[in-house]
Length: 113
Image: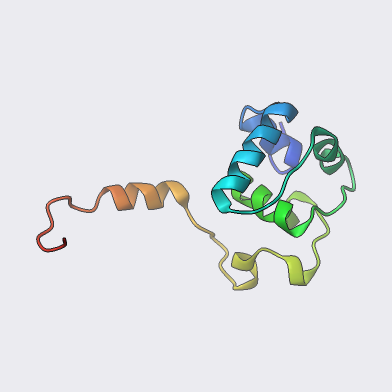
């Protein structure tokens, strides 16, 4: 399974095209972005030489997949490239490490509210 493509990452996450559309909608709500994608649009994006998703769709796809679109073979112009790549951050946010590290903060701190 090729996990360097949109279809490969979708399948690796256990999604059908239909369930991915639902996960996309949920992520858009979580991000506060007004973006939708249909199964038909997803099929086009998974085809060879896919069209570039709209900026809102791009933001949701990158958040959902954890990979900048340019790494998936989309021809992304420089002004639309992922902000973390444009700022030179090659590693991105390690979400699991962040959650683990935040969970490791001692609960019995003095002070606070």
